[in-house]
Length: 309
Image (tube, rainbow, N blue to C red; front, side):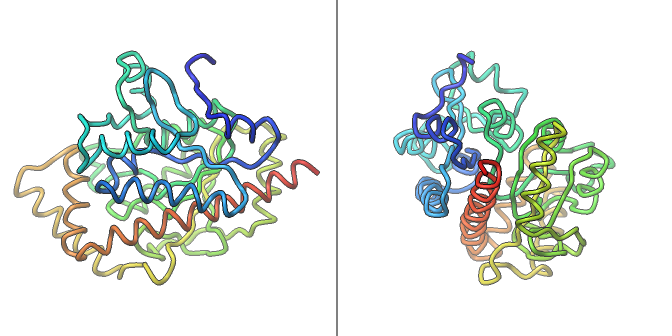
């Protein structure tokens, strides 16, 4: 496909049957302040390489879907985001890809867009921080992330620390079920909630050999849906669930009083969490994405070894 620009390192890995792990780019442009975002993105790629896989950070640059970025590309993307010096990167979901490419804007890919682009390139595994989902109050607003619809149509194994804490996790898990997206806890039967290790919901536990076998069978049956693997944040960096929940509830009440609605609610909630935690949420975010990346690389390597035998 002429719109795909695959980095030579990634292209060689795919051609030789080496494990490759896709990474989103909104965490660089919108998820962290500059220069922490650039430093973390480069560290995550190093973690993946150390675990035996090849990283493929995905973004929209210069009219192309870039599968794998150089350090200069990551710097350019990071400095265009929050706290940087650039004019701003577009937060691009699947529906936004054609417009961003046509305008040759800088586009940071969401979970949905990254999953779609990775699938186009033939990448089977995707590590991210948290997945979007059903927002609190969605019964009134119908605010539901496009991530879920995209994952219901895309054959990729996505590893995250659950869905984001600010969402309605129970309703999101119900929608995963409705959309036919299987959800497993990696060596845990408690579904994590991003900053917290246990969201209060149970999940079917799975180990590495079973997951690899499951993914191979999915390939044979050509089932075109994602498999979501939830990995709890490392215990040392996890936040207290009661603190997170109370902070979110207070922030939601404050947002309502200020008339903050729609897309503006999420950044408002996240900023409140940063303030009230004294910056611990940033540390937690960095810790969990590195942990997810390492776990994904190990899963990808085990899968590729089994597939090549």
